[in-house]
Image (cartoon, rainbow, N blue to C red):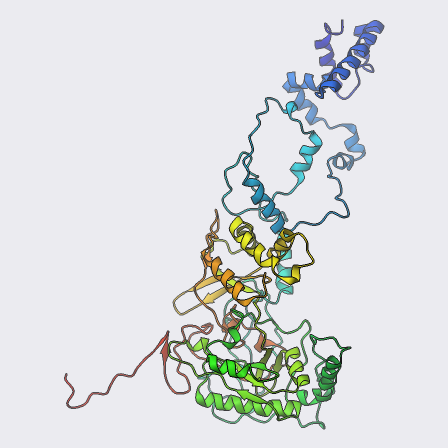
Length: 614
């Protein structure tokens, strides 16, 4: 009897959705008492058979499949529980909270897992109907709510390719806010100060009047623009005399006119303060800080000075003769000193720099028992911005050598320099990428991480990480390798030359090894890696950048942040030429009057004589 009234019951169910059949008065009236009992017996048997076959289909679902027009009406009318409890509809779809001890997976780990899973071909199973799938609806909801890994390269051909998605799940407004926050908190991404540094000038500027007053610090601060490039503001002149004249004596007499409120604080020392050497360094700083302030040394900025990224482990000793370096490394207590704003050092400039270093260091530390070896003269074929700039000091007292390296940046009125120890180590700067069509830093980062998680590059990285003692505590070397890859950072800057203006994406990553040779071999091998994808085509840039101010290899001269540090008083004479040369393709003359371009020098044409052939 129940089977004969099946169609009428289905129409009743459609009219009253969500109501049990037994509670439906129309069903009770049509079937009667015996029919209701038969319906209960029939429903119970149907549930038992469906539970045994694990293929339960309620009667209401079958009716909706046979009548598509009823499906639309059922979807258009939400249940009453959605109005009473709006959050109840979403609580059932929320994924379960992860366990407390579940480790977080970075982007490199996800891409590596995706790369390994895509490499295995699995047979595709065809399902005739959705209800024949073995996974439940809850498992399908969990899979749909998981954010797939964004990829910018071509997907490999497999049975089930992963769905493509946007590179960032953020709202556009939230993405802009996150980008602004990262630009404000990332000193490496600061492209270019908004105005020129007041103490940096070219050599062809005229001397301003004596009464002109110049502020010590540019109140505009560092620009947070995301695009690097030269400033378009008016150049500020300097009251200091031109090159060749003695600078005015503005140093305050010590200790009568010393402003103790401006005395810098103790720099962060790399050693522990409770040790004997650490306490001696702190005592030396406290004893000599008044002398430092009298020489024009400003307080240390909050957050420290900007980092200087070199091109390689031995980049600070570039183009210095091997015998000179070998002789210096036989000396005790060695410290390399690199003055700011010097690249090609002539004989007259070398004599002046040697005298300023000797006089300033003796006045700062009150000692005279140390030696300074000048850098090698520029040889033929060496570009002027790649000339040797490191002054190799030695025979320091151990406490003074530790303090020089701990402070690192020494800014005085007459000369400023960078002090580093003789310990070659792989830098964080990896390489610059050029030829990109998408300059979003997050997209470039995902592109490089995806390249590093491929089999060949990943296995080479894993071999280096295994031998690194810094990751010996991590048992899973795959996790350690992905941790190194996740440390990747990308900064996009402008590269301006005489002929054109381009962009470059500089890559920074924690070195996977401590060996300088292995790191250089691995870095050079990356130049053959194809970084191309669907929307991005990139190659390793062959243009080598060198800052004339700090000698960093990741920005041009006009993008340097050191002349804009609060309290900078050192006069820097930058090479002339076009705006934003960045230390490249410069044709301005040096102190000897010679003109260079590229690797060769321009020679003056011989004068004609009476016997010369016309």
